[in-house]
Image (cartoon, one colour):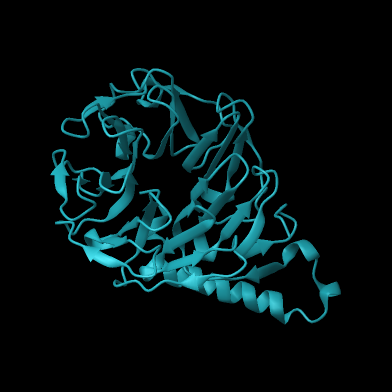
Length: 352
């Protein structure tokens, strides 16, 4: 599985410590090229899987129950107490007070006070829950391993299973309203519903299907990770091998967009004429024509670690989080990014 949630934490911590020693132990800078050194500024050392931003606040979640919050654009951070120690894979807020977090072993957490207090909701499953989408304080969906689809109409007091428990990972879910939504996952899975998830029907991008289907063991279609729609008709899906596919008819047809990238892309967002996408190896892509074409900006963010989640509150203000405590934000539409936390490798073009 090409997904960073299973990254070995011990290896990452060893890397961080090694880089810290190298950065702090160089007494004579003339002995080492500046571009070879790494600098660190850490809010947390944990891998970060999700970020949410709303009404001037931002929340991040990650490894071993990590939940942190800022109300001053990242100048200061407060740790919010998690009632669990499980990895937390996604976070979704529908207002400045009401939000949910999902994670490992069927974890669902809920807050009604902006995260000052988080309570456990019973999901009815022990599967890993990767992604959540709420459209209001009552209505939401969660997806995860083993074909898990959960739905609530009462703010998470009760969760109802949808789908058919197939042996597939569902990595992303996106609803444009209470009726129309999409799920993406392993082997180029795309499912669509027009009735709030009561029934799910498959959609397909023909360009992602293996060409050598006559072989005894044809290669599997690539995994898909994130979906983003700006209307019931127009949306994008991301995946392995630099995949971004786009639909203009609600998913009846999907077409691959050229990205010149060959690594996994986890998230995509489009607002007006601007678009952004992030993924493995510190990859960062931008669009200036509303997601029609994409440009890969190599080494733009100063890291080769994976970037797992991104959110924009408008066409200027956005956040990115990733491995080893990486937190970036922008207030100019992604032209430049400020490193709030993480390891910055000099010479890779990252903001100071």
